[in-house]
Length: 195
Image (cartoon, rainbow, N blue to C red; front, side):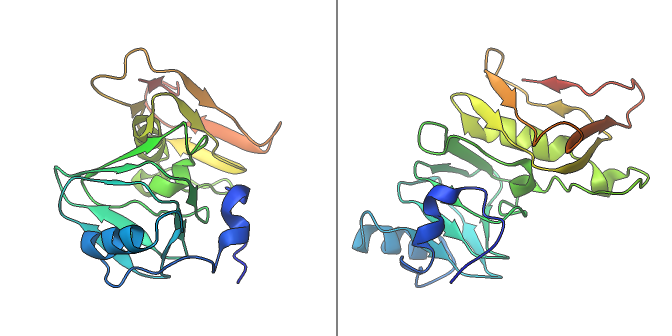
């Protein structure tokens, strides 16, 4: 099975060579990881996996198109393995995602809903890349390497990460000159990325 536009090429060859959780929740993911240590966990297409307690996932995760992790409000999911996923939103909900940058060296703001576009549209809350960038910066620890990919990313709000991230190293790497564009649509006219 081949999925196009996987940003993490290190896991692309493992698509189809893993285990699918028996249920779309934490218990299913945990069971898959415990029964098959070292084998990637495949998150099925168009399935939302709800997480209702703090947990650490040590296995590599492979997200098929439409697969999403949804930690509940107040819940933290720590991912210690690598992630292979399409350039689309894979993390939803009010809970917190923490990704170990030693295992997953790069994250993509699209995984938190930042939507790039290629035309001259009027920026709205729906096209605001600020929250997606902020979530990616907050999640990637101890440092943050953000690679937004090609497209225009509009910032209606600033990418602000509150508390405990004051000295965090943040690198934002585009796809090349005139390929990745960050535009401000806030009242200050500046793109503020503050961690």
